[in-house]
Length: 551
Image (cartoon, rainbow, N blue to C red; front, side, top):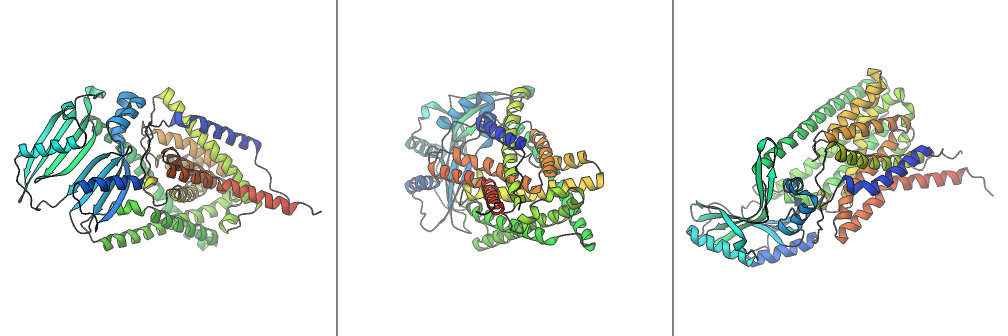
């Protein structure tokens, strides 16, 4: 047997250059706020429970859910107004931009307790949710104000540095509730927007008094309403572009379904590989959903039955998994049938991998090519944003010690399952099926490369990147590169590259969180992201050993 032909030196050099560029320019292209996650989930819960014990909260028989979250609006406002260095100082010393949020609740009961713990370990807010008809004292506002001020002083606040800006009272059926707010006199952040819009960002404290007890507290950044409205309007354009991309993708999938049925009648569809791939995607999606159970638990609305909520969540997960599997099934079946006519070389190794034959020359080559392509793509991303920021006024909100994967029950698993599902479904849809479809019916390679790349690209426009269409431009170029790679290197190399890129980018927040447990998870992610390369090396060695003459 002849050993598999080595990857082209130009591709290997491009991959090496991309890796070097990514290593040196990632933080230039994606600045990070100088804020460290000093408390783990367990430590945050311990802090919250001690605080609630001081409030006399009976937590013994309540369910608990915890989530990590951040305030994008606050960070964007600070970064745009005072720059990243000062924004980082504010996030460390003045206001909690990122925090753990824990809630204790009883299904089908209104009453619950919520606590926010900032990344530095201090309690940044709490709320005691009670029914409006719950009984309590009917204190006058002055007496309630004294309770609120005493609470803040016990939390270490010097009220001489603040001015009271809000005071309101609400008469309930069986008690009186009061709300108070204070703004810190200094420091403050002045903002000058477009069309003469102005405003001031302040450190704000709020306290809610329910009857004769403090039932709520918040420490946060009060962002000017004009800024918040403008940001929401800007981001809504990105949402619109993403929805348009989703609609176009739906049309592609309908066409894929129709073509799969039509070609099946001619005996021109190989269902076996597509079914295996669809089964893999369905399984990975279920695993991904199970790992994200803590986030689903946190979102539980106490108005409905707990068992009903869990049942709906399980059924919803299974339905979504089946739909994703069907997506992969029809895109792959129709795309493979079309590609056999338009780009037969692009299928090299794919059918073998789909049948589980991973230690073959074609799979080995695709694995190594995909790794080199993935490294090149990572380098391209950072170079693109360095140029866009330096010469075209683009900018990205700084990263912080925050990521949705912190809300996964197994942090290192989420980047891998998300990346694998995205790599397979997107590459089979936009590269295998999309490019083959437009080549077959539009008779133009340029159209076949650009149209699927554009549909795929603008599906990512909901990310907070400014201007919002920039992500679309970035990925139209990137999608065209992947399209060329599909034609020259094959579908399997594109899947491996896509998986590598997503796993690295999603896993980086684990490495930069500053917490040892998450750092270890991040290292696991980075190691498993290189699985395709390891697979390729093992396959090449096995094949070379088989091909070598015996002694």
